[in-house]
View 1 (cartoon, rainbow, N blue to C red):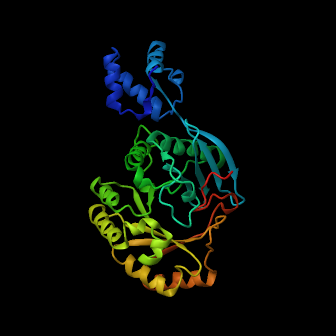
View 2: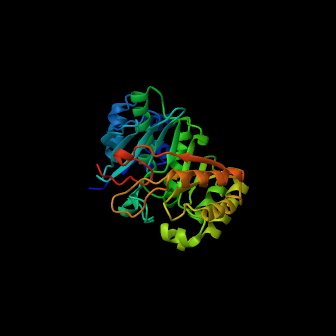
View 3: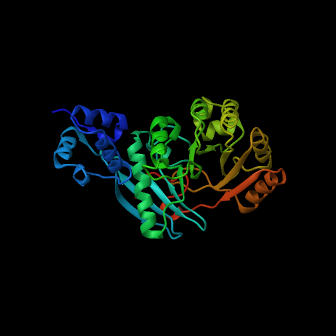
Length: 345
């Protein structure tokens, strides 16, 4: 018995071709597409505007593999973490983060992660597989429904900052963003979407060549190659110079100002000298810097910088005309904060 393909992995023209070869009018393909992406049908039986015979035909040839909410846990600060189960029983996590002016959905792009950043809980899981575009879209669709139900408003922003390295799942990530921003999908502005990368220089240049409209965040964490080598092993293959060249290229092609994410680790990257190196690095292109409080992970030997050291670091950058935001940790009590996603419910 042949294995049926998930219909959501097909392009619209593939569905048009299937309909045509089965003596179905072209408009049926558009109806199927709308059921899949606008209405997120999880069964062919849900597609009530189609004839029963067409629904049976689709069921004989394809499957729909939606993700499902497996577990939910709520933080004292209002942050909600979701554990999603994929069709093959792999688990990934997403987070709803409410704040005064926005409601952000943090989503995952891979099951686990292969980059092994020393401070990140997800890196301890190792990479199991990429998440396909439909599964990424499902996370957003489900979190948006949860937002409307629990906060009485849709999500305002999406960040690809959950489990995995988005640019190592390039095609699926871009395809998912196309669905999210499409009028046939969620019709969200790409300016409200941010993709975060540890610094895959080749793919950053590809983003530029593909003329993307969404925001790009770089997980930097040090502007010193020696320190970054230790924190992020990927820096041994793609050093700060190569990363800088790709960011310059990205800015020149897109005119999109990148955001540097910089977790402050006590006595590792939080000195005034570190701030000076970060300033020199940041001056290469227009940018802003998000300083992030480190969120403790069991068994990892890192701790967050003191308030005094953090404030001194911020003041130095601001005195030198750099836009700096301090990101306070959200969802720490449920391991939903930055770097803590590891399926530990």
